[in-house]
Image (cartoon, rainbow, N blue to C red):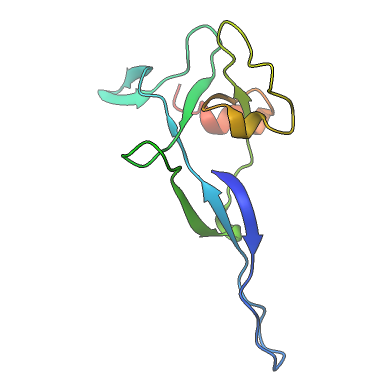
Length: 124
């Protein structure tokens, strides 16, 4: 998910427990283009030339609205890096401020840290 907004409902005024913190995020999904079999089960596989998983933005069935949801902030397990897939030529409008907004296809950078690498590729 791409975190878009972090918020908390108004807490109690009597000094009770703090209210939970939530975030609103937009979903990504694994590309169905790359699969492999592991013990007879079909699983997503990294793209062969870059050895990273490919992700796409998840849109509603009409293709116009990105899928999103509200989740507790404490449910975040891992922060990962997404790298836009540039294709044969990079969009000249892309920069570090807007790359997550303009691109629809990304690589999940599992080489960002040792922990990320092992968490994502543990089935291999």
